[in-house]
Length: 323
Image (cartoon, rainbow, N blue to C red; front, top):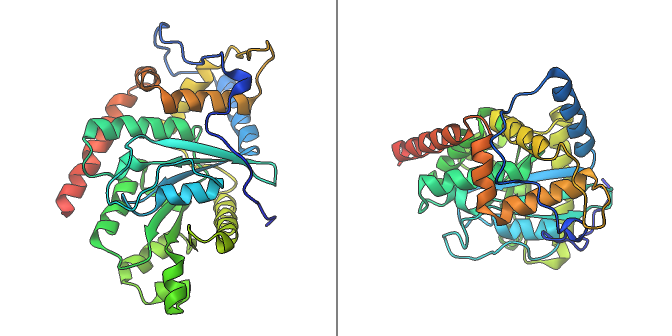
């Protein structure tokens, strides 16, 4: 794989479209139904977008190193990261940068989805935000966990990921361990670590088609190599899934809303038509920064509010049963 060195990036760099809003709050809700021709057009536009973007969602229990990994992938400090065992922020966030292969890497951090202190209402809102930020769907989920004892809490969190996103989500998951320096200190390879791990972790490893990586987020010397290996595994995930990104009913509904809101091509402040990446960036910025957009999305996506709430409640019920 071609080496992808971190390049300057920004979550809020939308200078070419800063005066445009894609979500119009005063308009009535639009039914998410379309014709066969519209569906085919939407599929074609998503294929074009998939050739330009690499979308990744970070998942895993609170305090596992998701935000630190996101910063390493993006080559800068985009997400709040802390060593404390609770989320610095509950809001799902995103960052992006250009890769040397010409694609745009988009990373979605999900601190609030796995924080046991949060209410179902907050988690439901952040799940909607996560889905919209990753629309039309992520190419990979990176399940992040620290090197150490594989706890029952980790097993519960894996079940929660399945409950939120669907059982087939594991086809798109790569395991990423943080704390590579600990293995180096004990002179243990990642393969040896997994081989000596509990059956539950080995089973998870097999479920993910043995896609696993490790990173030292604090070592400039090894971080670039570690990031390139993770990106290689993401590309491998895409190939193993036939070149397709992950999708589900709620991701498809979210994408329909996006297509409807951008059906009349927006113009930037210079009066020029924005390309697909510019429009996606503007949409994501609105989703990330404005809770009002989430309300609009929840209303416009058919039954998404009910589906999301039921999904979150059901997932937490399963967690409660396991505790």
